[in-house]
Image (cartoon, rainbow, N blue to C red; front, side, top):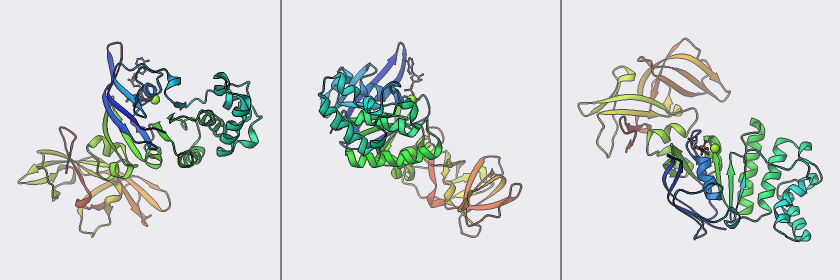
Length: 355
Ligand code: ADP
Ligand code: MG
């Protein structure tokens, strides 16, 4: 197995630069997730690691070896795509063993490896079927099996669950986490879905417009984001953002009437700030937090929890999580209080966190 190291990696298509000098270290056996909005460069970066895209600048090392210009086959990586890319006329076993057959491995060895992979993936009963006789989840398992038999140092996944329905996606997510434990391999997994990133990753790389915004463990990114982008991308429903201005050494919340926010920061208060408040950091009236009137527009009752969507006095959209409180209705005005010590303060101009 192997770790990876990317140094000042750049990708240009003609005159257009889409990856702007990425530096990244991924530890051996890490489950690393690249997450970010569509078009931010996740697939491009993964395909450069795989050797399917040429690297315009910088270096990529796998297991300490510079593979920047190596052939895909020489990198010890195996990739699993969103489109399963199975051969329709071949059986499950033939699909899984095809790569090994092409590189001249003896039949007995191929059968053994396919058998082992099929057992790990619970495909042993389906080896004689063809892809059209399989469900979407089973097809994706075959595609993963095809990667496993090659015994790669690094597994690369590009949105492997995007074609599956919601229920199957959750099931396969758990399977992939189990696979990572059992295979004990380095995995790099691309997704635009922050829930997949949060649940699967040892480390998350948040990409935005071809640059890394932050790298960290899932809960560290959630609790302690470096900037407004990361705080907005990680967490569902999205973190609330309220405007504030500095006045007499305090932050005054223009979105919340005359609300004043007293927070202790190491850094200097910005003149214009954005205050991030997670939906779960609101409490009932009387908790001693900062009060905020919210005109309720929509309430989602999910059973254990309700999400209340509405607007502040100044018209800023907010969402509040309420537990054990099913009575809230659209049209009413509620007073929610938020805990000032849980807020995140960002400089409104740079988007950077002030800690
Ligand atoms: P993601 O996987 O995060 O959705 P991509 O890595 O596919 O994003 O794309 C990143 C950027 O590179 C996008 O702006 C996309 O339009 C551009 N891009 C991707 N492939 C090509 C290509 N073959 N030629 C030109 N531009 C490309
Ligand atoms: Mg992509």
